[in-house]
Image (cartoon, rainbow, N blue to C red; front, side, top):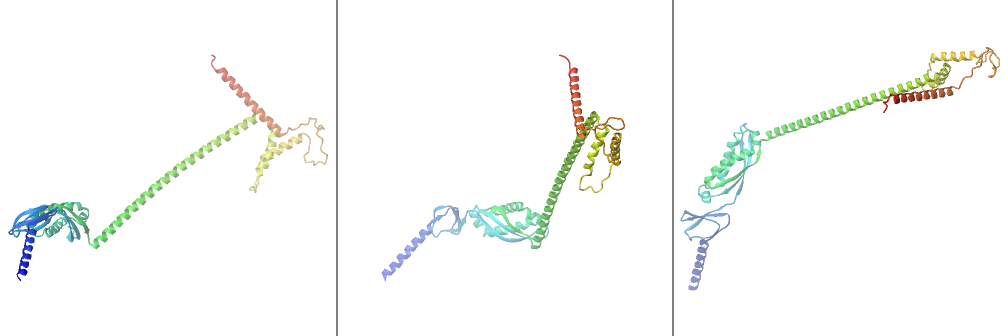
Amino acid sequence: MDTVVTLVVLVLVILFVVTVIIRTIRIVPQATAVIVERLGRYSRTLDAGLHFLVPFIDKVRANVDLREQVVSFPPQPVITSDNLVVSIDTVIYYQPTDPKSATYEIANYIQGIEQLTVTTLRNVIGSLDLEQTLTSRDQINGQLRGVLDEATGRWGIRVNRVELKAIDPPASVQDSMEKQMRAERDRRAAILNAEGLKQSQILTAEGEKQSSILRAEGSAQAAILRSQGEAKAITQVFDAIHRGNPDPKLLAYQYLQTLPQIARGDANKVWIVPSELNDALKGFGAMFTAHGADPSGSDGAAPRPRDEAPETGFEEVVLEDPGEALKRAREEAAGASRVAEGATRDVSGDARPQG
């Protein structure tokens, strides 16, 4: 029996010693502060490291995390200046700077920051309309941070950042805004399409204008060159004929050779006989009558041989071949041209000043 009592007492003593050791030694982690009270009164703040306490006299009141904290508050209904209710989510980034003030100045600094954020947000949004609220997030964040940092300074809390996570207007307002944005995008698209079509038509018209001008200039130049060439050709032919001095009989014969070419062609259904044909035929008739020959042989007599002299007493006129006559006329014209060019060169050489 005495042995059992002794064993129980020994166990109790060991438990007491262990408890005293645990209460005496305190290890504080990094970025953590420990608030110690002695007999119910604030004693000191323990930083990171190993610390010794007086058992049953010193008591740990709170462990304060010194790292930056992030807290997201639920959506809060806020009324804008144009009487629209919007729901706003906020995110607060804060950090305890004074563990003693965070422990003794406020019972729950998280709840205090949340309520202060809601009230400040309502004051700020209440002075803005919906459009300003949606487009002034940086301004709202700056005002919220200034008010919260000033109010939480005495709590030992520093507010680093305040962010508006979401701003949700009513469903009817969202629908109207989407329709307005869609109409604005459609208007811009129509304007861009109209501008592109206008520019395309302008460029097309400019191209057609330049093309028409170039075609007209080309046609004019071609017509001028053709007319100049025809004029030169006519002038040269006329000069050659004039210098060759052909007789009327040769001209009449050439005219008769040209008539079949005039009547040639599958599309010619009506052929109008020129009045000059009568003159040509009269010339040929007069020529044969002058020699006493009847081309048709209507008198029934045999045709007279070529070497027989005519009864009129004049010598028989032998007609030269038209092709030979025309060739001779062209040669004479070419010779006259060469003579004229040689005379022109001689005159130019005589006009030069003598050295």
